[in-house]
Image (cartoon, rainbow, N blue to C red):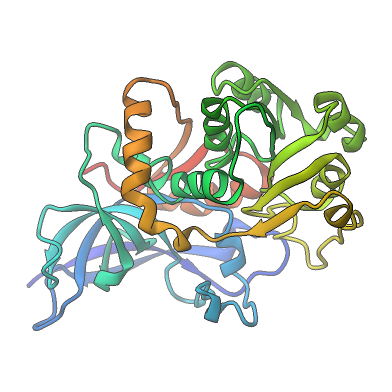
Length: 345
């Protein structure tokens, strides 16, 4: 059986501080497009790969994270992440040639993966396949679980979303509007603020880079305080938010992107408000909620088809542009969900 070329994005070495494109390299490997005899693995052709902020954490060796389901990358090996792929050959009865699937794969053209790496078969193909790296994949499930399951929203509540134009934030805002909440988002450019207000339906939005006093800014947008803060950034934003939460407010903690590249993370000085205001602040990981995926699809697919929920993607073409697309997340270069196209079919 002939071997074919298999382009890969490989981590050169563990990263400290801000990641650079040069921390990764494009490697030409080869792969035999045939399953080993008796293998129960699945051979995939990768189509769309997901660039996600959490991947920065896996580029460093972090003590103790492996046991929690977050194993670090291995230098000299391809990055791994979420992706939408096509099955070329399967040694597992759940999958057959031609199936479209999404789950964990490697940053390369073709991957041999354990069947357990595949999360779901893609049944609905009347929507863009790239959506399975975003709104119909891990970020969509993250927004759904964090907002509805962890935050337990009620109609009329005040919701603040940080990193609001990102893969998760843009959905949280729209879910909040569907629930009948007042929603404000923060983002890092005028273009993103306009997007939040004019396309994604947020009531208000602001550019945090132009707000030297975040406490005053939040008081302006939330004179009566915040019921739900969907936390994506941490740091100074969290400090200011805690001063502005209402009694019995909820903070689902999804991410802390402002801290990922710091060698010395910032402290939070206003945590005592958790006591005074009886705030529930809860970290969550999406893989604890995948059992809700069928219910999530039932909820979201009609909204997508009717145009009631929109999703903004930032598409990068080709594995060779993968390092730039990934690194761009940490300077806010992307507008919307960052997707990397390996092949369109």
